[in-house]
Amino acid sequence: MNATLEQIWRYPVKSLDGQALQEVSVAADCLLPHDRRFAISYGSRNQVIDGRWASKNSFFNLMRDEKLAQLRVTFDVESGVMSILRGGRQVAQGNVTEPLGRMILEQFLTAYLAESGRGPVKLQERQEHGFTDVEEPVVSLVNLASVSDLERVLGKPADPRRFRANLLIAGLPAWEERSWLGKRLRIGDVEVR
Image (tube, rainbow, N blue to C red; front, side, top):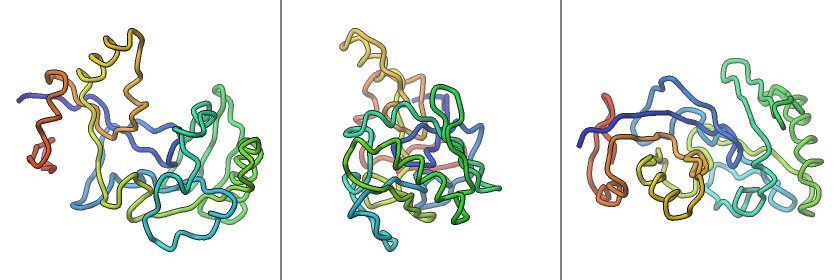
C-alpha cells in the first residue's frame, strides 16, 4: 500500500478548529504535541479534572454545541497566546498560561455560550494526555478516499476536518482503513498501531 500524508492537524482546544502543521515531532504513546491540550468545561464540571480522563460529555463539544463551529482558534505554543476568531475577525485573545489571559478567554466563551444554560465556562488543561475521546493517547487518521465516498453517498460535500483527524491520508482505496485494526503502519520514520 503506497499512500501519502496530505495534511497534519492539531486541535489545541477540543471541539474548536484546528491548526495545520507542516511537520511535527512525535513520541511513543503520546498525542501530537499540544493536541486537544485544552477543553471547555461548564457549570458543575468546572472543577479541575485532576489529570484524569473524562468523556466528551464533560465538555462543550461540536456534536451538541454546533455554535462552536463558527469559532476558529490559533495557539502560539511559545508565547502561550491563544486567539479566538469568528468570521475571520479576532473576538478574544489572551495568554492562556497566565491567569488574566485565561480569564479573558473564559469570559468571552461564557458570554458566547450563554444560551446553553450551563453556566460559566472554564478552560481545562491537560498537557500530557490531552482531552481525547478515548482514555489512551491516540493520533487519528482519515482516509481522504473514504471521505470522498461519503460525499458521494450523501450527495453533498463533507469537509474532512469535521472528523478532527490529525493525519489526512491520500492514495488509498476508500475504506481501506477498516482493515488496519491491530496492524502496524509506517508514516515517514514513525510506526503506528
